[in-house]
Length: 200
Image (cartoon, rainbow, N blue to C red; front, side, top):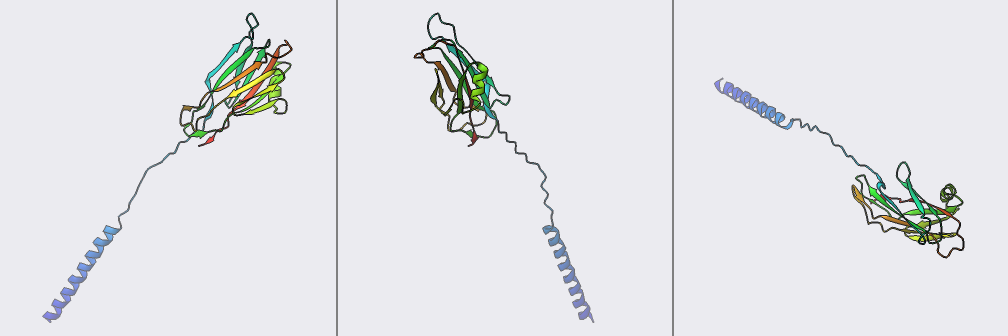
């Protein structure tokens, strides 16, 4: 009977030992892993003309002549620049400088500017004509175009790409009352210019 009781006690001890090992193993493998946190990705697309960098430089066609005048107006979103000029005599020029800039944090690139040029009987008429590519002409990238007695020249060599808060190279536009013109009638010119950027 003692042997049986000893055998029984050994079996109970063994079973209790197995139960303890199983309980410890279960506790070890059932640990809960909790990771708390938040991630925010803030990207901003904001490429447009820099309103702080825009200059107009008029040059009179001859000494003693009436100085020409020019103006730059940016659209409310600064994506389009409207350049106007009043040219008083042959040889007059107005030069404009604009700066496209990446105000966002997404790298951008462009292949160049798009300009619609036109003349008209008044500044308003020239602006209206420049709104329609059929009323004047178009200059894609750098180049020139002549409408009547007015020659338009656009010079722009964009960078390969522009990163966050980085300016592109300046755009220079020149409007000229041709010296070869046979009229001295005041001329009105307008250009609408945009620079289409895409993500680099």
